Length: 333
Image 1 (cartoon, rainbow, N blue to C red):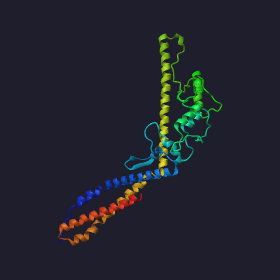
Image 2: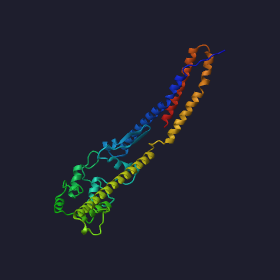
Image 3: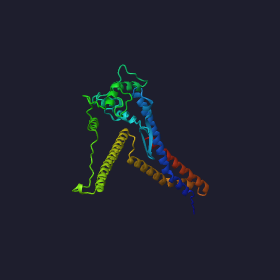
Image 4: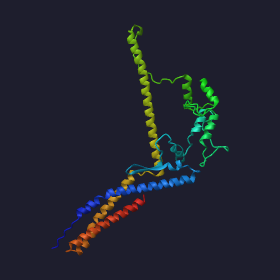
């Protein structure tokens, strides 16, 4: 009669239970390594296709960990007021016409640059090492046209003619004024002297106001003014919040489409396929454990230590095979 006793099965099961976490860590490391390789490749490509790009442009390509299993590689602007990288680099990715620069907007607001036109450095422009015009020369040009800081209400960098007009309280409406809706609305507001109230809140109406008590008349007038002011303020705030939410939603959808086109996002179905494939591999290895141990156990019927050593060796071989196979699949992602 042969009696077989196998120890260490619980330890083996516990070790195999750690495999999903090891898979997740290996996947995260592979994704992060791939993201940094993509970032380096994009930087090299920008240096190849752009003419003397600045460090600001090259450094705008960053790796951002969104969640444990989601990493984005793209144009990341730092927090603050100067978020310009996406504005001019986005056109290089998505195509289309580039956005106007601050100088072009100032000239267009002064009625000097027609819609759809852009400025380029001329033969006499002072260029820096990156091929960009100096800030001082840009200010000189805007000052010459009295186009500097028109919307800010400041006289800094403004010519003498502009200061004279500002002191007289006149607004210049040139024959070539900007036809854009924003510019026309701005002109209309200043021409009328005040903004038009868009919402009129309900007020209490009395048949004969003259018969009311004077104190009640004052109370009615005060409540009407307060209601008008509060109502208009509330509507304006709601309009701003709705506009902000709409802009954020459009920006998020645009980022998702760019990431999809660049191949930076991995579909959930693909990750589910990888995990299901790993589960099938693990199940196959465990099912073959008995067949792989049977010859060793038969050869060492009376040597329990040898049987334990064979079980541990086979288990380690299985783990190594699974690790090697997982590494090969990660390299193929």
